Image (cartoon, one colour):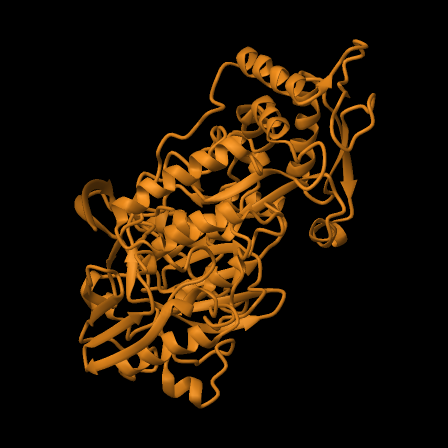
Length: 569
């Protein structure tokens, strides 16, 4: 910028002002004491025009830095082994994948310019860009892509998920074909949370490269420059990344990643401007953020379940009517507002969230007025032989098989002692169940043995918070099927009829038929109430409001930072 101004000033005044300014200044060389300065009086009576020109001094070009506060990667930076969210947050910045997800969680071209899917979802053909390079400048080939998928499929982290792959072929320099051993409509969202189909260098892996060390060739928009354990890591822009030329991203030259596990300090750092992003953000601070200028709270809707598991092999929970009564008496809105500070999503007897538009079928049998639900629950318990004949507010057993008459309906419900929301949720359960004559005794339990004791069937009822899967058929398999990875933590039962329904669903190739089957299974589960689920526990990210272009998807990824910017920084 050039600013000009014309001033009319007496020359004597101008010289005097310059002398005063010089004497007052703390800059420049100090005067030499021995030097004698002879002062002369100068008198000028003529006025002259002086043009003062002010030109903005350009700042030397510097790096644009994104500042992140997060926990240190707990499982390193190798895509085949980094299965925690803390590892993924860094992995997703230095590695890259064939496709990306947009704001609506729909796949969009990325390293692959396009793809073709067979009608029966057994073959996926990807067409790669021609300008792909690793951070060391070496080309990314279809052989690297083939090798990466095969390596993931052999890893402990990925083995179960990628057991659906029959083969990976690279017929030419731009084409990769992934063939399945069954119909897999969910292949492009199969990774779910904390993992992704990242592409690595075959040559680097075979040479024994350590991805936790600076200099390892990676395919993403950034590369690891420095990692100081317990302190920080630095990511530098990958000059060979294809997106620089194709999209003009990333806008940041480097990412300074300071390790922080203290949520209070993390929130304060974003508020003060010391960092631009912190996660996971504690739900308890969410209400306050609405009034804090300069920060924005983002929520990643997630297929997770918070609620209660039950031992369905013995009374009282072996009776469907009892389980239905417990489900009816819960108040999902209370759980969400009081324990999760309105950051979660609600469930009313079913197990599919409203935002899951591809699968949602409005199975919400318990979404009724509280008085109506309590009356219905009371009638079910009366029918099941649990009555409050003595009027003490707690029901007793009368004619319940396997339970002595007069035994009160009293259940101890353990929860993980190190999880405040679990305690809050269980205390609310106690209050809800009072309305139907069931006595709940919350039990703070050692978190070190909690889940092993759940698996060993030591509890009648217990608090649970577990993940699901973005692909609803896979979610049913994980949580409710006898062979599901999460069955032993929450469902904790084997139901052959349900297993058969889920197996049939997974074997179906017609997506429309699958949706009908999903509704049938969700209705069945809502009726049986094998588990009590009040809603989800979503991931929260706190960001500097100046960040443009950021969004969160159900996979909780920060990949949107790749195409985000802080204008003016």
